[in-house]
Length: 187
Image: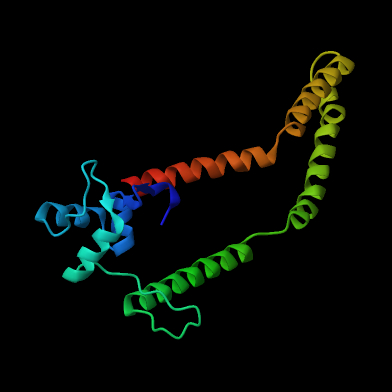
């Protein structure tokens, strides 16, 4: 039980409806129902439940799903519900692990991506830098002036592209995708 949810008054431990529900393995609405039905009367004027008295009342009436915990030597049997919860948790963990492994197979190492794209980027850059020398003589007017204008425009474009932060672009796309997925789950 969470320490913050436990109060002690005159040597008596007091808990809220939610904490008591967690202790006996039922929802807080079921605990409230027991209080309204008079099955749980160990409640003080502030609405807090006297833990030991409340547990005794619930056990005496056979209510709740008390957690069966194994002894320190693990020889005490675990309840069927607890066993099923353990199986379910293990199955979920296996599914998550398998999904992570599949995701890793779809991903590529950063070094491999750089090795693949670097020659293409260098070739593209070289082609861009060759444009002014090839195109300037074909344009009307002063060839030297045309070459300066084309070179300036290409350098500006190269500068903008060099300042592009791919990690920020990818992070923004992922954030947008997560937001869309969250909105879809909410609907």
